[in-house]
Length: 176
Image (cartoon, rainbow, N blue to C red; front, side, top):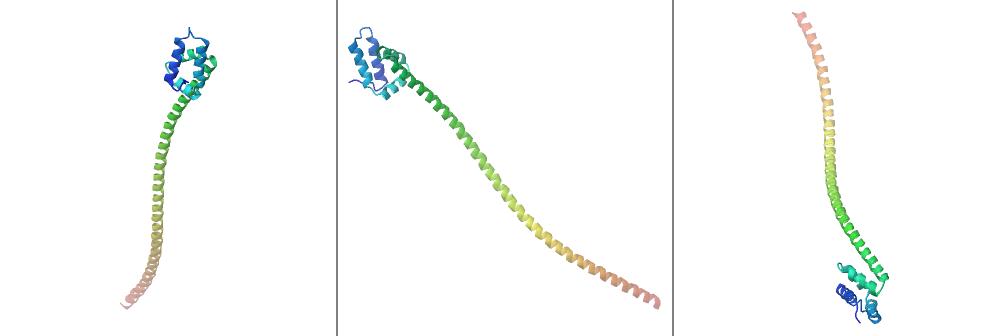
């Protein structure tokens, strides 16, 4: 038994129907219907979708032998196929855009992480410098306190020596 398995078989089937349409008897019509009926629905749908330039011939032949119902089914399948193709192309285009955005986000995130690392390194260095300056400041304040104490001692000594010098001058002027 003949079956329709691909686009070429479907075009051959449709051409045979159209070439003998004026002389087709019921037995011949039944033979073409049997070919259609024994063929896989999936193969028929696939062949119809692939038969790009021959769909008018195929639909005309189908109408002559099978009526409108199978044509409607195949047209629905073709519309669904074309819609899915358009949707898949749109999805692919969107995925390219999404992947581009993801790449951009990754680059920005990487740059941000580098900046954050630099920030924390700088903060660590500033804290170290701050601690070093605090300890230097404490050391200098202690040294300043010691110097101030020494200055006060020298001032007190200078005042004592000044008094002794005044007494010496007084005694010297009395003796002279």
